[in-house]
Length: 446
Image 1 (cartoon, rainbow, N blue to C red):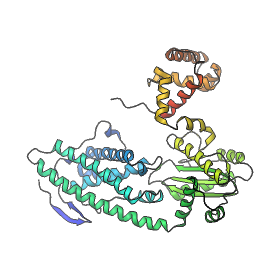
Image 2: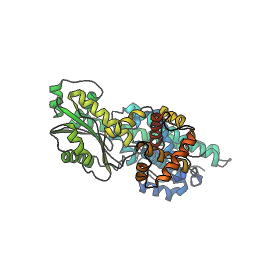
Image 3: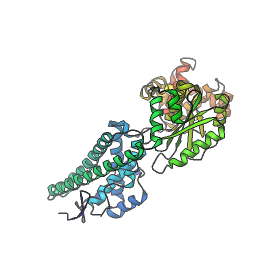
Image 4: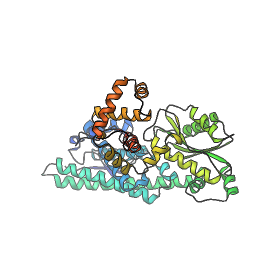
């Protein structure tokens, strides 16, 4: 089949009839079929109308694979917990290309989902070269997926022609996509570098990296006295996508500090759905910490805070504490809206190297690290039992089960471990905490 072309949009020749006839036969893998779409619902529906629901889910899976490849090879492309933002872009790109090949007329190769991530890239200092390398890597994954499907589904008599048409259309699409993204990046970079927010964030980033600035000048520029005592916070939206309202998040952080009461505050947006903040206690930092822990936040907003410190050094170390707590809580939010670093300090140290920590936990627990429901139950009962100082009654009250059930489970856990709980007790407790934090869901079965 030979595709006919409509007038070009940018440098993309958009087809008016399918470039390849097998697009509606695309299907996701069994695991991919359960992925939730990250792009907007209107685009997903448009793909369904163009090529069917199975092909739409295939595009979701390929977008996920492209995002994973970019994250693995160019880590700076993704901010803490911001993988879904990248996936939104790679998925929408896959869908745009799919509709282009299906002959759908598009206004432009780049969607709002892809463009929406550019301000975050600029704010975090991701260079244009890094952006384009990530785009190129993602596109290579997407193109390879289409070509592999052409080899699998294409009619043998027309496969060579379909491969050629597919390659031409894909190259033209990606060329126009990269050009538009680069143009938008440069425009946003100019806007950002001319803003006061960029100047203040740059100064703060230099301080937290250990590059001290002249205190008087820096304090005046930040409108925040760096010579005093500081308590640092990280406040974030659970959405962590383009749906996150950055202004509303900034206001929530300011309101949190107002509720707690403070003499001065500094609040800065650093990435999509995340703000950094510092505050100076009116009295001592412990009192401010208590007020913060008791403060309320909107349902989709979370916060952590570090240990107070004085001067530039305290400004930096309190932020390091808050950032470490954020790394843990952004992946697995707790019941508290506002969490102090002191609740997570040991866990943060234990998980400084997650891979090694997980290997340690599995070695320490042996068969007690299994994922069978009854073993998980034993493990959780044992953890509570140890936290209660070896009190069956205390563990029973917390777990809302009988004391005899606690005693039975503890004995069974000892049998699986092959030793008493007094042997390497601290190692055992650390292993239980690590496994609970690292493995929130069982690994997929092969």
